View 1 (cartoon, one colour):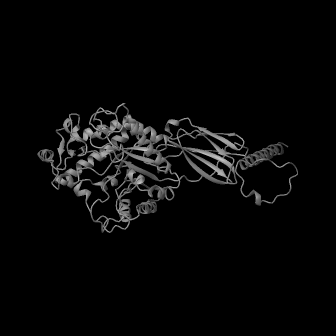
View 2: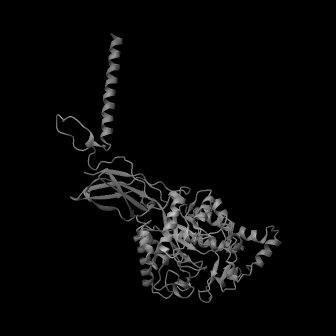
View 3: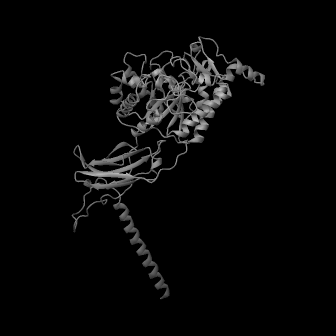
Length: 530
């Protein structure tokens, strides 16, 4: 009897567990969206038919579509008033109006980044104690705008409001531009006269070999990174100056070269110059990330490393003329993104676009971002819009999911009537997030909360998240008749009215994700809608 009694208890426990598991399984199945329910043939129910597979406004798990990604930037040059401000005597209101028009244009045409020149020549388009206000901003070096405001802070805030990244573009070694008026007592030409070299074309250059130069520029970069909410620091192609700047004569750095030799230096003069720049690039990369791990560092070098790389390429050698070993920087991963200036047409015989891009890709051994610079202003083509559009398509084919490009410059978008329509109706038809930067540390985003309120023909979706300071954008997903749509929203948008029907289709569900400033996605919250 005791054995039979124990058996009865065990059998009873097994039966109870089976019933519990069966109930749990049914509950899980009920929480999942049903598929092809119209095709399932069932007998007429004995009683009332259950209402919804998923109760309204309940969260559920589902496969969301992949979000489109591509870096789409435009350079905005301040040097010589090329782009902004258009003149050096504009009022503050006029300066702001020009900036707003540019940012609105980029936002409306589905760009996602601005590369804004804040230090054209050892000067500042921002409040600085290290260098004077720029001549190109106010018409006089060292004179603040009136009424006083901080242009960089203004650009950052207005760019971010529109979901655009703001990259600060600095020229590291140019001390004075020949279009910048006569150097006055506040100019760094006079304040740093012991490390400044005058070139035969009227420009002045900081000596890249002098430790004082490297320390000063390092302090400028760190100051900007520390005080401003920027997304990246950007250097262009000017390191040692182009030979034409000194009318073909060698760069006059005898003082620092002789000092190097006196101290036992063994490198050739060319290798010594390249070594100066290499150490500087590595230093800047490390210092930026030591200050703020999420601020990226990008360089846009001349598009050719050396003639013959790849085979058949002809033209200037940045390795030998600018003493810029750009290939090394990419190989070493001293950049987060690399934008070689591939300013030639697809069919150029000496500098064809695709072979150059393929070669740079082959040198990208650490898988940094590779986003070519495109000559949108003056590419040699009878149909510039089509040429630029085709270069974007080639870049996508070569670079895959990490595609992107930067347009030189914003003037190429505004002064050619066909350019923006060619992009907006073609490769930039939809908005895109920037590609992720997985090698940089980021604080993990929490999962946002999603709230749905029925407003008759609309539902009011709203969302929130605890660590909102880490958020840069949102992605809202809406499902109509089982098909998902995505919409990239700015940080300040925390709600949206969603129509229950659209184009004859019925709203089924909504979901929300947070995106951080490195493009990383949070987990999502999805809710069924009835």
